[in-house]
Length: 263
Figure 1 (cartoon, rainbow, N blue to C red):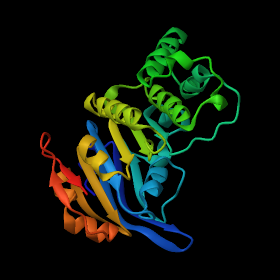
Figure 2 (figure 1 turned 30 degrees about the horizontal axis):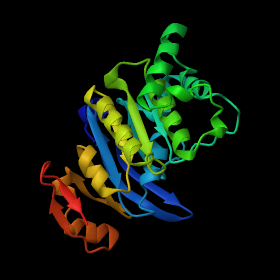
Figure 3 (figure 1 turned 90 degrees about the horizontal axis):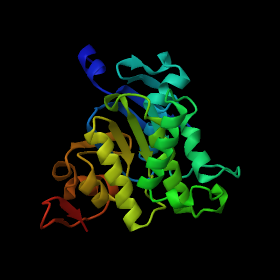
């Protein structure tokens, strides 16, 4: 991999091989994710999408290959510094303490360099975005699954507020799966806002049409390799979907956006 590629990419994966229980799930993976872009990771169950998110976040180690964040080797980042630059929202977040909604969002600011006044303002702004400000004093365990997920989205996006927009990395692992239709759109629109302001957003998405609508770039995996990488029209072809999902899809074009719709 060229040094300028490592320097310019927010995230660089160089010849990654990932194994689980002795089985190779990702091999020879070479991907870069850039600032100002919302990228979707697509593929069938077991394709390694969530594993790549966990690898980038440092939870998993590759059998071989390397990970760089903003041009620096992953292992060279301290945990507090990395947490200000990168936030991860999994499909489900475990939290059993009786914190209020506002306190849960505040957990994302443990390593923040913002003043207390700025933190309070940020908590309010983030809860208003996810339509949870009115429940700010509610005990977190009393919320529905979708409400809890919206609170955690507010938490992880607040976590990034201490660094410039171009240095923010947001990783979303099936983050919309528990949300209703309107809040699913809300989350993806806000993730796009973060990307449009210069952040790097990478989302694991199962809904191909949701990815086509909101993500500027799609990466399609069919174990153990990436088989397509590009915009929605380039990636969501009948041939690619058949290869990845073993499904004979019908592709039509949206009348307004001209984006592909998978049936």
